[in-house]
Length: 99
Image 1: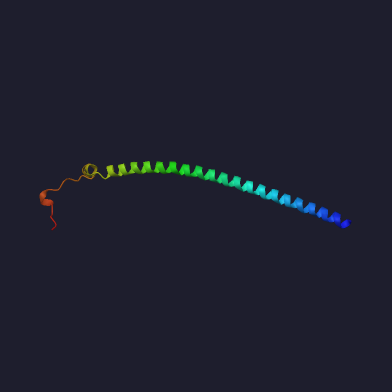
Image 2: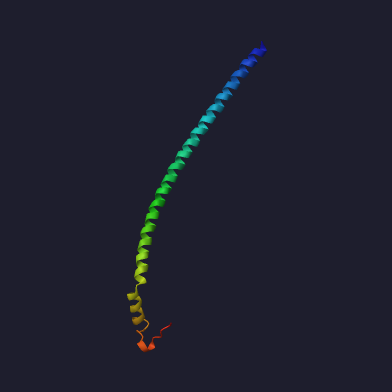
């Protein structure tokens, strides 16, 4: 009779451990799922912020292109050459034609 009690108790113990392991696996899956969802949301926020930064950089680039065009304008260069450097237009005698 002692063997029957041991086998019945052993079966209950195995069932209990199997239930505990199954419960731990399910809890682990829930934690993993939650972590994945949080990471997706955080990544979405980062992408949104990068899109905003990208738009700001495009606007800045357009402004810088306009400023570069203004700084390269021949009228501005002539004005600086005359006012700051004291340069004048050459006489026709000072010009040399290169063939």
